[in-house]
Image (cartoon, rainbow, N blue to C red; front, side):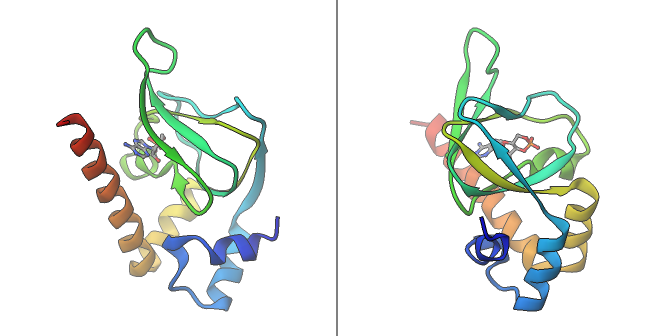
Length: 142
Ligand code: CMP
């Protein structure tokens, strides 16, 4: 994985120049997960924010219970883990690798600092979160 190459293709970072991408890249740590690994566990305290470099994950609510609810499937260029960081609350869902998956991870502290210092990133994250909410609402009303 060439992390700078990966960051270039992440829609929320699309407006950033090379220098900014380079700085961001230094804040991110590559993490590799095997198919089936839970990357984030529902109800855990949050530690980080993840961008998918390759592979696919699914987002499931109540994964351990009798009625697991699939919320979304995410792939390269998508991100997850932002909700608990925004709220300072536990993880809202479990995120599991559907295939071998490579991510770039950022600490909660760096994620918040990036959003605070760059309104373009903050807006792009917000747009995606709102779109996900709308998609979920549409599905619930079907
Ligand atoms: P977080 O709550 O930190 O951990 C679980 C993550 O799953 C959450 O952040 C979001 O990134 C993601 N997630 C939760 N609900 C949805 C949804 N409806 N669509 C897409 N992703 C979601």
